[in-house]
Image (cartoon, rainbow, N blue to C red; front, side, top):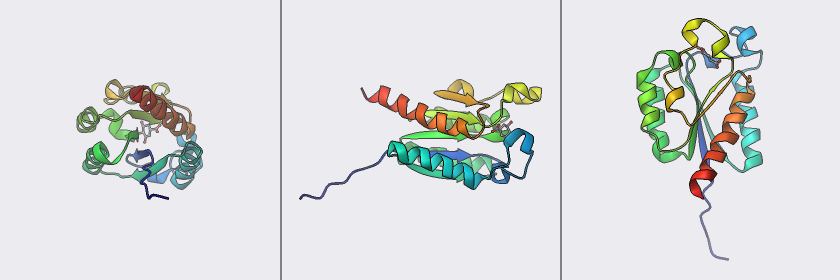
Length: 155
Ligand code: DHK
């Protein structure tokens, strides 16, 4: 049997500031489960689709921008929850614009049903997919949506 490299589809999941505190912080908005629980949920969904997950979280804008640059060559798609940086960061928006791979912006809470400063996203206009308010399941929906977008691009 000849050796052959099978490269799996890899999706980078990028979580922004304070999401490391999931389960402890504002449970009414973000629930009581931890970021580890979120990672497990996303990995389980990805396993069912035969997809590899590169799951990350940072509290630092520049680190997130560097990761998005890395995703240009390391990943087939990105799921991005920029958290508070959603509402402030032109740098993250520009990094998303520099990506050729599909990007899903996801939010745990419904940002349109909260304080008015959360109603604005600098990312939504440049993301391929936007999913908000479905709790942790937003990430699972985001995963299926970017895979669908990838399929559409490859036919
Ligand atoms: C998470 C945050 O940390 C907030 O700053 C955003 C987002 C909403 C979420 O719902 O996932 O405003």
